[in-house]
Structure formats: structure tokens, C-alpha cells
Length: 206
Image 1 (cartoon, rainbow, N blue to C red):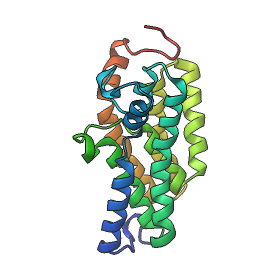
Image 2: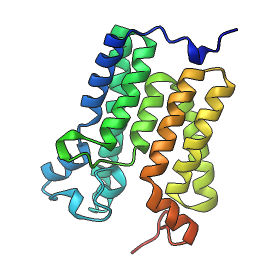
Image 3: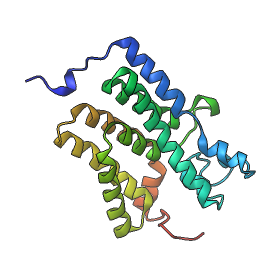
């Protein structure tokens, strides 16, 4: 039996179209746009300089951070849903992946984007929605035990590809595994702080 991973049916033009649509949607810097619209200035000038929800939260506006998290997730989901509707499931997976890449490396702001957790979840919602519940369960379990948000996300992103592979969704598992590796690289400073014991815990002040 030929592995499902090796039986892609998508043509190159469709793959390129899916990638372009995904990247363009994913590269919308909602964190930057929302903070500027709210009169809070450039979110890249505070904290980690990141455009993601965690850094938006450092402005002190929880609602804006929540909106950033939601929109960053939904832009990946939308890419997968729209492309999937017109071009099929494989194209949806490619669109979700490139939405993730677009968020991490948005052309509009010098390729300096977020760390990808929200768009990772959004891609899951678009191509394997039941796994969002698995992600949430792992995240909550680790967060409850350790109170490290970053560690919770890192563990969840490690578990998801393994679970997908076990369930037989080889293509989705492979793509999510690549996304996990890339996001781990983007989280390298968090990983260093976790190892040294200096990473901030959930609810910590200052």
C-alpha cells in the first residue's frame, strides 16, 4: 500500500494559487493594525516587539489582545476554508500552511511577524477541526501544571502531529510537524528562558 503522504493529487498551478492566497491572508498584521487603530501606537515598540496577541496584551488592553488572537487564528482558517471550497482539501492544507508562514514572515512589515501559535490553531481549525479540542486539552493540562503559557503551546504543538499521524492523517500530520519545527525556532528565546528558569509564568506581574 502506498502511503497517503506520497499520493498528493494537486497540480502545481493550484498549489501555487493556494500558497499565494494563504500567504496574503496570513500576512495581515492584525496585532499592529488593531493597536494603531486603538491609538496605542506601534506594538512592535514594546515588549518583545512581536505583533502577536501575547505582545498586544502588554499594552494592557485584554480585549484587543483577544481580538488579535481570534483574528490571527481565523485568517488561517479562512484561507483553508476558502481555498478548500474551491480547490479541494490538499489545496486547503497548503493555504493554511502558507497563512502560517505569512503570519511569521509578513512582507508588509519587513518579514518580522509573530510566533505562529494562533495561526497554527487556525490552520488546525481549517483542516482538522476536532484537533483544536486536543490542542486546547493539552494546553490547559500543561498550563494548569506548570503555569507556563509558552511551554503549554510548545507541548501542544508537539502532540498534535503525532496524534494526527496515529489517526492516519499523514499529510496533515506532516504539514503540522513542519509548522511545529518552524514555530519552535520562532520560540527559541522562550525555550532558552524555560531552560534557565526565567520564563514568565501565567499571572506573573512585572
